[in-house]
Image (cartoon, rainbow, N blue to C red; front, side, top):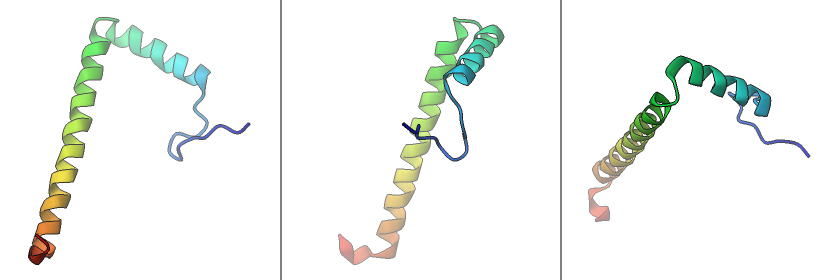
Length: 67
């Protein structure tokens, strides 16, 4: 069975993720990681909302008779 991978990640498997997780815990500590995750999630959400808003506003500008 072949694993699906993202093109920019390549062959990132469980051992690599464990190493990355261990390094993150050593660098930031267990108390800071949830805060970093929440901040990252908020940033991604705001980015998606911004893309959605700009897409909607550009659609309205292109064809105002659509409404």
